[in-house]
Length: 147
Image (cartoon, rainbow, N blue to C red):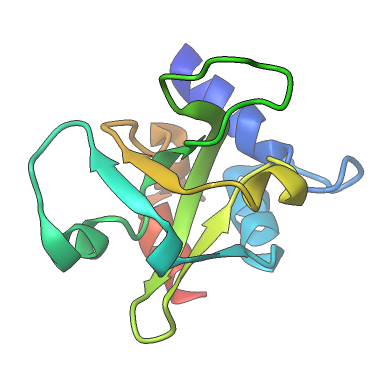
């Protein structure tokens, strides 16, 4: 439950501070109003941390998932960098293969997002409280995917 609350608080940063959130419905409506950042697929390497999916099939499993965002470039002040630089988490709203882009919601700054070249697919699940919207089971992934 604490993990879910932290994820909700993290992605709540995507919304304006004065945006009223009194229920999960409000949160979903707020997310649907966000213009997602678009990452070019040709620039992105997907690293799957929990199952081995290769080739273009990996993109079929990204829509509606929470992913880690990384950059293989070093911080400007660092002299050595052997592992990717973690930028933050993102929610993949859609993958547009013909359009060569990933539609991403994240509170990370657009300046940092321009450096993303690695996406870590993980087992982080969408918070369970968002699966129960207005006392009926509704999958946030499907709702956001349809928007």
